[in-house]
Length: 305
Ligand code: GYE
Figure 1 (cartoon, rainbow, N blue to C red):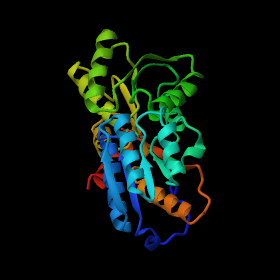
Figure 2: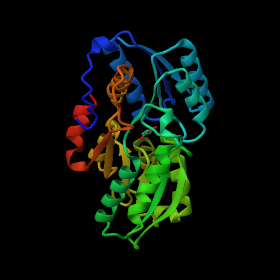
Figure 3: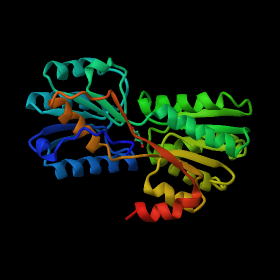
Figure 4: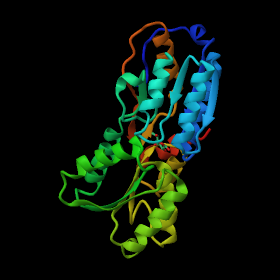
């Protein structure tokens, strides 16, 4: 329901659409689910989806968008790897009369350059993670932060939201913060260096990871350092991928905030609505709840099917 834009369009109206989708890559379990979901939704609606994987590179995304424009697509889905540097290519799409929907991340560009953004409010996600941690630790905790991809809106805003809440608790400090690039291996590697730098982990109360994959990498690093993740060191992360529910059920992590990967439906609806001259909101929000270990086993069962 949070994603629902009641635009009242028939699937038939969308069946002739050709849409380009410039995806970032496959850095996380969440992103793989998103790719699969958007492809499946296009197929269900009879949309001809042109898919392009940018392998984490903005220049590849810019090339993909230009090629979609040249092919005369009806609309473009763009999951922007970083926030800046999009003005020119967005202007080119606009000049060609092709609506662009930003999926799952935002850009630092004038909002007249795109149709809408279908994404969660990352500041709220970060604030929610911090609120949970403050309650769990009675406001006393030395935290290490695993940031997402440098320059991405997801990393910038998840950091900002977390800091905005912990700033109210003099007993909570972020003692280390570094990017693990939203990957499992990146999370593990950075966590290893944090553990080394902080007396083998004894000085660390909690990990705040900008996504579940990095949290799962941190779990491995903490275990290899001879400590108990979820107990000696608390872990809160974001995405709610199936594997994190397994980790929570096993007692290895403590909380996750859900981000719904099914963003294709509202994105396609927005493009179809724009074609019919209807008003589309500039931000279609996709925020989800926080999950705790008490329901993790059940959630894992449902989600890993
Ligand atoms: O949380 C992370 C992914 O942009 C919201 O990117 C997305 C983030 C997601 O790689 O796992």
